[in-house]
Length: 297
Figure 1: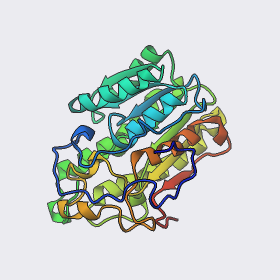
Figure 2: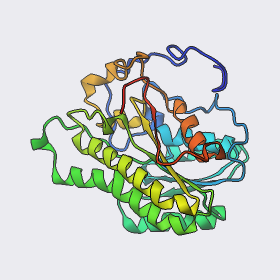
Figure 3: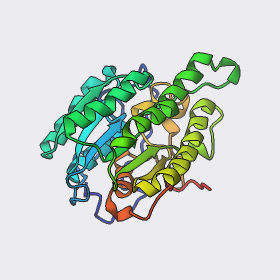
Figure 4: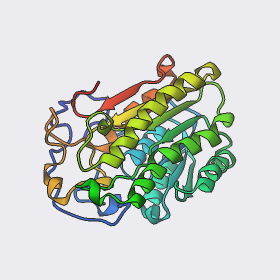
């Protein structure tokens, strides 16, 4: 397959997958996913757009976060990876790819629901990379529940702790260490605009992330820190098979987009690179939608 800079037909650039019904325990692993995801290991070509940057990326062991970590390294950035301890195998694979690109990979396992880990994460990044100037808040929790009657207090709380409370805590710990020119990119979702009935807790956190991003961008702009977001559509990741989607829906995942297929994680990476690079110096408070053509506000 050609690299991301080669002109190709987006309809068939990546396979139109029909994933079989499958199940993994939360949080899910890339190594066990059928079919496997494309995170750009063999296709992403860097052009030096993030040379010398020092990035912290949450949820960077698999899926979108892994694709972003690989792209950042190939663009010249050192990367600290935040992920759950259960995802160690996936994380070490991504670390190997980063190191083969000649960059530093700093694995930092832990649970973002723990406020102490959120604070320590920034300190460990500063110590391990010698600084921090690019923060990507990507980690997310998504569990499908058909009826609000069956949505437990525990799930509601855990989804909010992972998706939005942790984002606030990491930003708060990091902001005084971010020099002018630094960037924050938050992962939101098409669900923020068009919530699925079985994802009301997840979708509502993504709407909160959109709002948090815009308000924070306005607040930090005078300090020279740019804040933006990326809103993925249906992207094939382990999130979908670890109860993120109803099992019967997996074979049809992403086929309702105008492109007629699910996206691959590597198709998200250039959006994060753009918003982190100096090319986007006049872009603040923006939510960049990467969703296969689904209409958004």
